[in-house]
Length: 156
Image 1 (cartoon, rainbow, N blue to C red):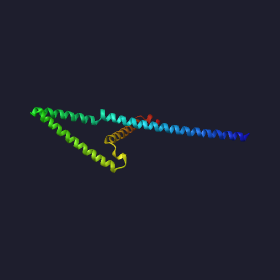
Image 2: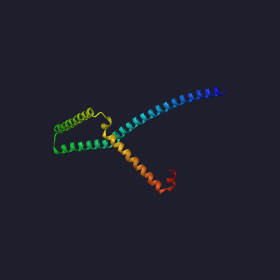
Image 3: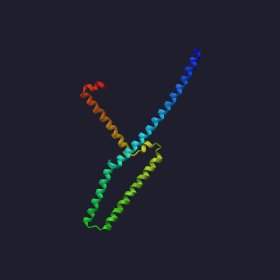
């Protein structure tokens, strides 16, 4: 009788190991999928923040305002529309040349450096620094709150 019990227990134990392995694999895949979703969502939120309300948008609006003011100033100074158009084309050409030069430097840097983490955009690095600082501030605010209320300090 004990032989049958042992055999039955071994079969159950093997089945339980299989179930445990399957659950482990499923949880790992679920965790991986969630992490991928979180990374993509973080990237999308960062792009939205940068393009809708970040410092880049403020700089673009300031630049447009400066250009409009410059155009009005040139009209007030007596320049013709044709001369103003030539100034505008010249400035646009200079900016495009600067952009081409920057892209050339960036491509040369990419070919030279194999590590992709070194060429992340500056905006993402600034965003990481911002979140680090926010976490530090939240930590110290919680610390100060617990110092003010000793009951909370005992609960933590």
